[in-house]
Length: 56
Image (cartoon, helix red, strand yellow):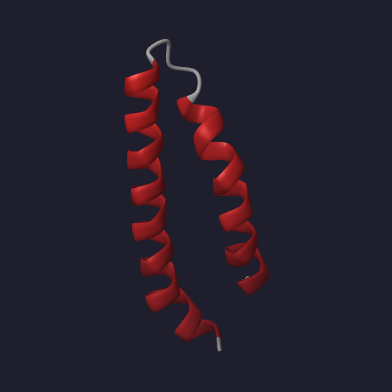
């Protein structure tokens, strides 16, 4: 499970820009990418604070 959490960072580094690049307007695509990164970071911190202590 810990390896999956670490791998999710690599997947997010590739997946979030790919998802945001579909937008026709560059400015809106950049905003979507930034919001996606912020949301991923919040979810990642939550997982690290809640899930990881229960695993170990």
